[in-house]
Image (tube, rainbow, N blue to C red; front, side, top):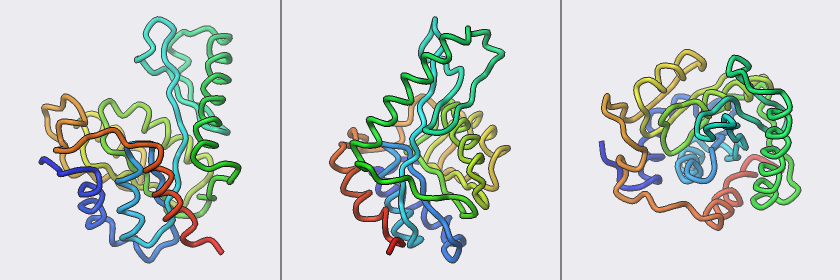
Amino acid sequence: MLMKNREEAGQKLSEKLLKYKGEEGIVMAVPRGGVPVGYEISRQLDWPLDIVMVKKIGHPTNKEFAIGAVSFNGQVINHEAGVPSDYIDTEVARVRNELNNQYHKYMDDKEPLTITGKTVILTDDGVATGQTLLATVELLKKDKPAKIIVAVPASSPDAMQKIEEQVEEAICLTCPQEFNSVGEFYQDFEQVTDEEVLNKLHDRRYHEEP
């Protein structure tokens, strides 16, 4: 399946998510690429849109190999990787500082929306290995949402299988055996700008707020 852009992907995902429309929920998007996807889902379900701030921690000898992930108030670490604790402590502090800087760039001093007891739809523009998204799910669970649904336009089969085991429902528009990169499923895969993220969050984030 070839999608025109992230907006079309979000619209197509929305059609498969309408059964949740009557529930109290929040769409959580991974910035920056997941925000246009999440924006369309947010509009169709009439839910607020927020961003989920999670970054991976790479192995000291191979930064692309994730040994864990960090959010504002939590962390998931694979201790079987045999990485020294002082490296992990340093990386957690560094990554958390990056997350705070990025969040404040988008949201100033606004607090994240509360997900406790609510249905959360977690989305991105695509999933390759799934490691960061799986860590994101684990971190979101710490805030005790009613349920978590992962909805993505494209994913590798291996990643989707792992995700399905951790959430109430996982929805993927295309999940081909031969998966090379997320961008191959889009006609337009231009990088999402900070300005676009800001505009979409401003439009949808406080939709249910007084």
